[in-house]
Amino acid sequence: MSITPSDNRLTDFVMLDFEASGLEPDGWPIEIGLSWITQSGRIGTWSSLIRPDEDWSMDGWSELSAEIHAISLVELDAAPPAEDVAREAFARCDGRLILSDAPEFEQRWLDCLLGTIGKAGWITVRDYDVATFSLADGLRIDRVYEYLARHPAPHRAGPDSRRLAAAWSAAARR
Image 1 (cartoon, one colour):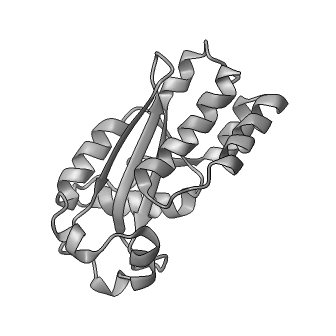
Image 2 (cartoon, rainbow, N blue to C red):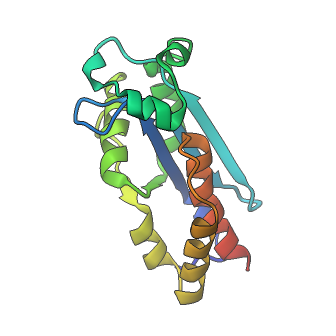
Image 3 (tube, rainbow, N blue to C red):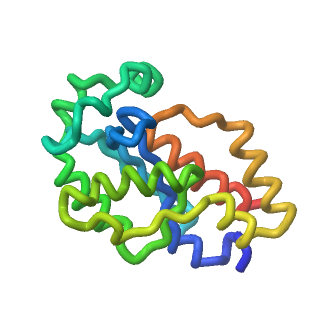
């Protein structure tokens, strides 16, 4: 399989990104972003802040993470409940291949989020780089990573996931 504009299999993938309360084991997701390439070649994105679940420890909150992502606890208090975000994310991901540039972290946060609806471990997050190298030829691989180098991650889940999808889209178009 190769990343090309005529390859409808690109629509099977969803790029996932989370922002989190911290990188420690007791951290939890504060924002989720999902992006995908549509049949028409456009990029779709859905993102949401996440109100912390009552079972998540506030020991996992990091002021440094809050500063990096510019997301405060006050904003999270007004966000949709974790269970609602989990249901929506599960519906958007179910049956698709989920990719991330940080799969170990994203898997932990996805399981944390989906755990609020009893679905932790139901979806596996795969490595974006491994998928890129297995799906693209040399020139298209160069285009993916050139795009990523020219468009730094803004540290917000929606734009970060969109950036990954846009890199594949840019490689497929040329």
